[in-house]
Length: 255
Image (tube, rainbow, N blue to C red; front, top):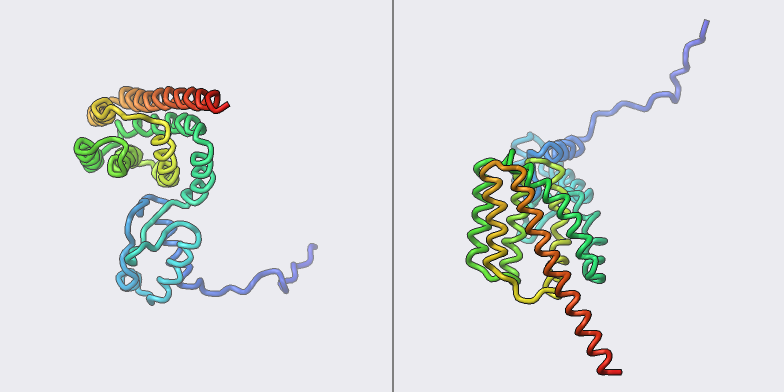
């Protein structure tokens, strides 16, 4: 007969779970299931404490842990906003690559084609009325602006972010959030490479994506997104080539 297992040193002491850990797990769950999306503002510590029936100190400890893990950030003015844990992992390497090796912008565009083509295709099936309103608002802003400026870049990024959000795929939304800082580096490299852009064509391309999503035409939405990104790639390649030729002539003259 098998002797009984000695219990000494086999099990650890069972203790009640700490309240801040319970609050933290709720935050993680709400972010993971999409109830709290990237960019969403958390209620005040006082309101959260009242809703959950815990102390403000417990809320503060849970928020600090979530901030340390890269899930939220406290912004100027005191607002606490959900970010993506993907963001910090993608931000540094992509930003450095795009800023120090401008030619890598083409690799960035290849990834955008795969990712945003899928987002546009999916959004055509999943976009809700509120998603379409957000896209339309970004288009209205772009119609009043000139390409190349900071305001245009913000509206442009807002439009592409709205497409990703309209997919209602939580991973896609967090990936887009993580890519945002690299978009800023992309815009810098794009400014370096591009000459004056044709506003009518760029606006028409974005409007075409919107119309395809609005009409629930998934194939056309993907095609329009890829056409837009391929146009951007074509223009940048052309201007990089011109820049190299100019530098070559300058080097020969200096020699």
